[in-house]
Image (cartoon, rainbow, N blue to C red; front, side, top):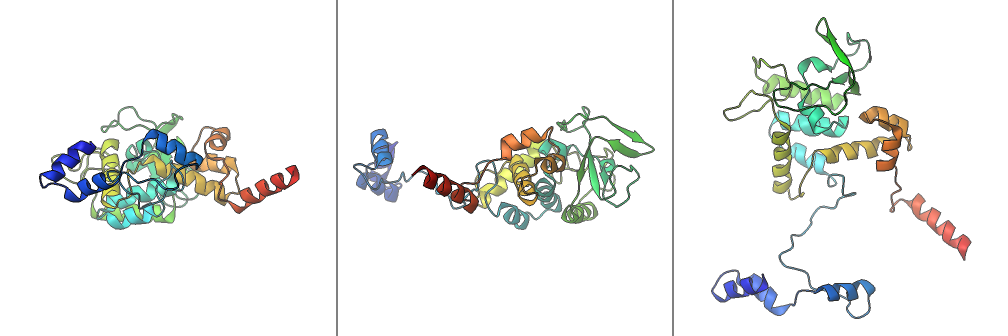
Length: 277
């Protein structure tokens, strides 16, 4: 690879990059090992081909800091703004979100289902969705007199409700015919149910435009779980019910870890180290 760019630079292409290669030797594996031990080398040249990271992530499973706000401002579509809000505030899996039907939404207080007094959503597993999206949870549910009961109940935040009404009043087709919530907005399939692949692509392209890196919709679910645990003082039962996990043990195993930058974490280590002296 280095020889290719040196050759291209000698013929007038990518001269600046060729100069970088000619001046600085790229580190070998042995150099990196010595740098890790700190014996011989104090500083290593960086690979000019490696992309720079302008955004720091708190955890590999979470979106970059400020990603939600940046994406919300970037999206010009009410549908896409609704997606970011619902993934972040509701902890939805992308299959759950794209598989929602209009009748699954009970966004007014005192819904007829009688299962939750505050605004909420019923997540129902369906094998026959036109966009092939499915909810992971397979709890029993039913429709009685046009009202959905059962399934996994997930509460809705005021911001979720606001983005929903914005989307429904500005972009949702008047005669959809399929009853699903999320629809495609452009192209030959305009008005048809929106697939999970389409939602992933929207986030992926926006992440590239904003130089946030690859944005995976499931990262917002991890962020949601961490925020709920922090707000609930580590109560895994609350996090389990808020995000629809199968058990509190699952929440504890995945998210119940200490933050190495937490002052309490550092104080505990200092106390242990002091006792061992």
